[in-house]
Length: 287
Image (cartoon, rainbow, N blue to C red; front, side):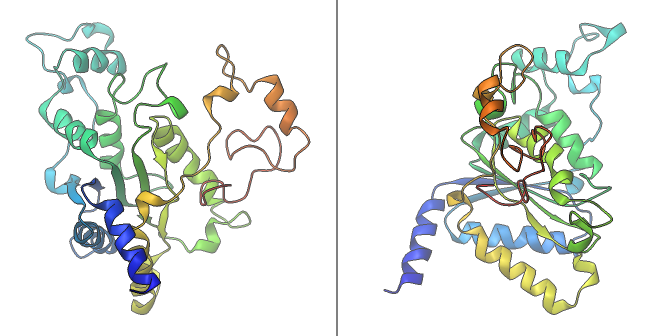
């Protein structure tokens, strides 16, 4: 048995009896996103992984976070000054969140790997996917003051953004008109995924597939195929641990600032300490 066969066997064993959730947000079955989603289902399933897909458009998933998300016999607790985060936290504790939310939470709780498959809209997420995040990742269930970032509730789960862009890769560079893709990804990968504790894997970006030849699109999918089997073995992206911050103003501890003050690059894209942003911090592990 050759080295490649041993590698395939190892990756299959890593995925065996694991569960993956693909949160998919595209309206067209003929889209590149659909192809990427279908490929992930096929590869992960063939590797022994149980795969569940939340096809948000097909499900007609409600994107707006409203008082309707709470099951009540009358009005919500603070009807005149409704506070979604506070109300849904209590509703989660009391088992009174709407059925569509609790079903997605069930899928997420069971998953070891979560893949978000979507087209980038306005440098961010499609509204229906942002709605999934707003409604499913409620306080108490997905995060709390004590359990967030490196101490987060989902620290044993891995998450990856897999998405298409409308612009070429060069346009998302440090010198490109769209700006550095690392800066674009920071609010999503740090502010949502890492905040909830996920081990965030490097994103899978399909650069402008609608503007390249069929051969190039096929090569993109092949690269995704090659990567999929080893997702659970990849090292996650680097974020500054909570232990590096004080417990009051959540500022970097003096000793941490002193240790890194003379370095060329800051700690991360967001926590850069006024230094140069570390290149590819949101694109590659170990940066």
